[in-house]
Amino acid sequence: MPGPRTILIADDHGLIRDGLQALLTIEEGLQVVGAVATGRDAIRVARQLTPDLVLMEFSLPASTGALTITEIKRWLPQTRILVLTFHRDETHLFAALDAGADGYLLKGDSKSDLTDAIRSLLAEEKYLSPAICDLVIAGYLGNRSPPTPGKRSGAFGILSKRELEVLKMIADGQRTREIADALGLSPKTVERHRGSLMRKLKVRNAAAAAAYALANGLAKP
Image (cartoon, rainbow, N blue to C red; front, side):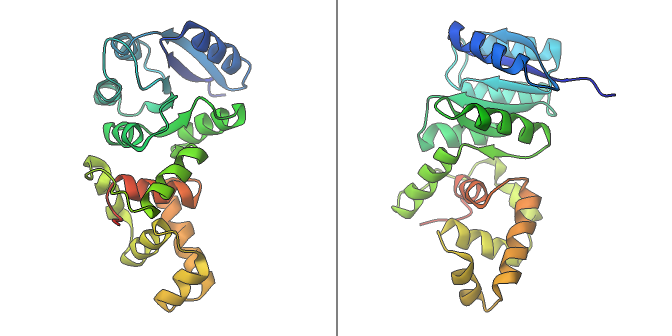
């Protein structure tokens, strides 16, 4: 049988580190192999232990969040990175995604959100906090321009032309019936394209797909 999936925790608040470690220790199939307080230590210990996942605060001492993520991914491209932070603004979200984070969760989210996020990332999927998805989409619909597209925008090259059209309309806030009418398709066909693009982007819901599209500049106001 395969062994437990390993997790490194990086947070500069001792109580949060201890709480996360206690919480995840009782989760079946997961093993916390280390806990550190700085970005520099997160990079160093990750290289030593090669964990399956790094669960990290974005604002860590001794390194920026973006640099910490970039360095871990440079040395350990297969290691998944889940940002768990108090930062609920678009700037921090887009910076984390552009640096290579695979998921973004808020510290106010529930325990089930945390475990769902971890297991999603370990299953090679993406995960965004439902609250942060709502924020990103609301900001887009309020005509606030997203940041300049980053290096991750190339991920959308795997989508077909029709899937890109559907994704752009999802990011626009349009529902299945509206998309179907605009494109001259049946709602069933639109749902098929929606399911296909979500599988290709490895996201679990339409809100996450839309947020990634906005983060990478695929859709614009």
